[in-house]
Image 1 (cartoon, rainbow, N blue to C red):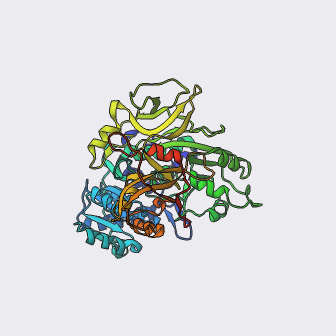
Image 2: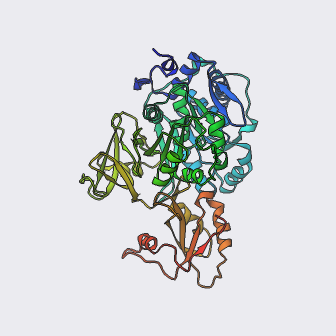
Image 3: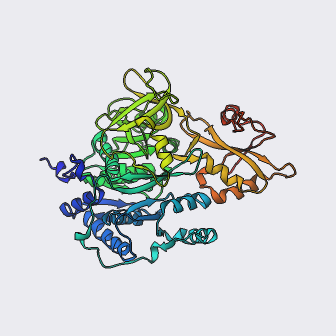
Length: 526
């Protein structure tokens, strides 16, 4: 066994041991003094630090009465607190419900109610806001301020629950399309397979440093990056919030070798002014979903990064498509990660396979039991709908080329993607329909300026009472009480009438085709 493999989780090839709590406890016991996490502008933790601090949090959760199978909802941005409650929840066999801290108002209320938790642990900066929301809506749930939760006593290690690879251990919400956001129930094997995909496709080793600037309440940050580090002994370098201006300095200062991006983040980084230090670093792998041509070219040529890999995946389906090392992405997604997944392009209406080179829906299914989501929390009908005919329907249009490469074409579902976040058009519409003088609303995607179809801006078309004088900034101010910052529309259009089908459904495809019309108001604050 070589030196690098000494730090690799010893049961990585045995799916029966793909259990988050077992992985963390095993690695902590085998390598207690290995420095595994460095928080930028903060402390550095060894595996033993991670274990001890998490056992203290687990004791808090046990004391308030949580037990195996219960849900624990957290609304925490600080990665130091978030990580410890995540590990503690796994130690107790809880289902960890991670909420996006940008979500507000009714959208947030929906997610809290769907989680069916007895408690929501909230970071201090959000405590008053969420307490008021719960009080106003008369929701019976206890809000706990993590600043006020403290224990010097550890949970006994013998009480740590490993569970099964089929046990749901996490829930993350993904945008709805024609309805509210959906809670993706994630079994142990699904969470671990995110990490294994990174380890195998990036060739991640103990001597590497992984830069994590994406939020941990998404699978990319928590599982593809952090858990992959915990399983290999690679050091996780965590920045609380992404900063384009700090990116290169961080990459150089912490001798970063690997990092992941989203399309919007890649665009922000490459738009920074050129520097004499652009190639003075040790970065060798960037994974990005999506990966447009121009950022890839700049990362390769200006920054000299050897491997820039496109990815395709979803919270529901893991990462079934990876780009190949030593290969130019060229705007494609990569090839199927055949060890664990099947991916086909099928007719979205008939569910039948179609020929290479033709546009159809990207459909996925796992080869590894429980390597997928187990369903949508509290929405069995949505689970069945997405899984019809034994294929998961991603709602994305794509092409499979004869070479086996996949190309993302567009979204079939009525979903909007902005700044790396999926936005529910339904929830945007509901935020405007709560305004008394708005009678109808349609939210839809408009391609971002200079984009290539992979990033959107939000546009909303509205019908109003005829006798109302519209102040667009007032509209935005009223709506944003129930909208995350990334969901606030850039464009608003007031309609005389909507194009509709014979059954009265608004034809958003026609609105999209018209694009930004001359009568559209532009939000200059975005």
